[in-house]
Length: 632
Ligand SMILES: [Cu+2]
Image (tube, rainbow, N blue to C red; front, side, top):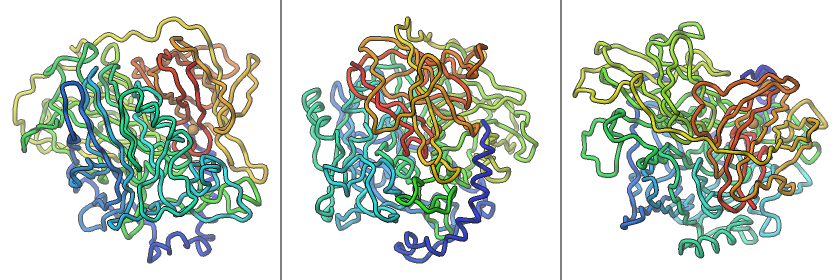
């Protein structure tokens, strides 16, 4: 992936933003003293130990259902090393136990074909029960949830007579279980958001999104759900392959902010014929009934890239860094939203550049790229200063992708890293067997936009003495459960990712989608346009994703409801078909859609209802690079 044009744009815009800062600190000043951005090179690395995310406690367990109540709340977390200020975040925890609040959240452990019910609660309020304004700058000019619009103007593009500042009202929440096979009312549709049940919601505000009431009715009828004010109860049937899903906020036009604020976590689905028997792979992973002191050999790694101010708050530009204005309504350029913002640090499981002590044995890592837009290319290396592409110290064995196991393990050795785009998950094995205690290895990032010394470093592994023998099967000898891709195909659809340039300056004003006709002609379509993708219930379709972007940037194609097969790719205008990447031959829900190429995927649609497909670069999906599809 090549981001040269954008990097150039951004570099050119930095001076503008610094110059404009004098007129822009209103948003920061409203929160007290003005903060300055923290230089990431001054943050010591590998001083804190990796936080191993525990399993989320249940609220009730019956013979057929595991129930959870999970609340989004504001709190502070020591994301930076000890000695630095803590960071205000929005994160999830079990409603009944505030000690479980963490960014990212505790992992929800689920079982194939056993139902999980989660009551998601929006408690983004202070201790007095008043709403908390967002900790990051909200651009109210996008097609967004727009609670101030009331029930007539919610989920729309508001009209302004002068350029607005950031929205500082109550924060919408709707939780999408990314990769889950669900009915529509439990999917976390971007217009199914709800505000906290706060005492001071301004009069006239919409308190729920456009589809909340309808989905509430469906949930009552489908599974007897209870949706109290400020909550939504979702059902996950778990009738899919064992894998690692993740949950995150999906509020219309605000997802980039809510996920960066910390509203994400992992959901691991185990068991059934698509899983391996216990003991074959490295384990255990944290479970709900763990004794203190349990050693874990299966560990989620959720990687993000926040920036910080010197006071510990998260830094995100409070103005459009690609253009110094004028903005909406004088032009079509959003005043606060940025087409791409790469953070300056790396966190794993909510802490900057941690260390993990590893025994000389095999580990299974469930990797999630939780960054808003940063692509990662991961390697285990012995030095963080070797020129890229560096040789690996030990290979990464990929055994699973987004939706479950690959047909066979794939070894990435030599100078080959594992590209992980935002929202993608990979199930990997790293074998530290035979390494001497005291050895240091590093997880490095050679993805586009990585900076040596900061974002090119992810975490450190320190080898410690072996505590117990490793009885797991070596990856080269593993037999993985079979994978049958979606069979047959009735329809081919052509859809697109298209960046729409401003009419006033050479910057992006809207990141749109579109449809492509048989001659290759693109029709741009945004979130507000009528549904054009209507797969028939029970059908299997091939979708061609045309990336018309001129900037050379990959988009990340994501579909709700389904796990698809990546079929092939080809350059637009060429007839040469390229096979899927070696590590994406299993079920996927998110994949690389490279610039100037057609990416072809195949999916089976077996739930009626309205879902979405979109680019999973959060800065893009928030500005209309997202479309509904309807299974009819
Ligand atoms: Cu995109």
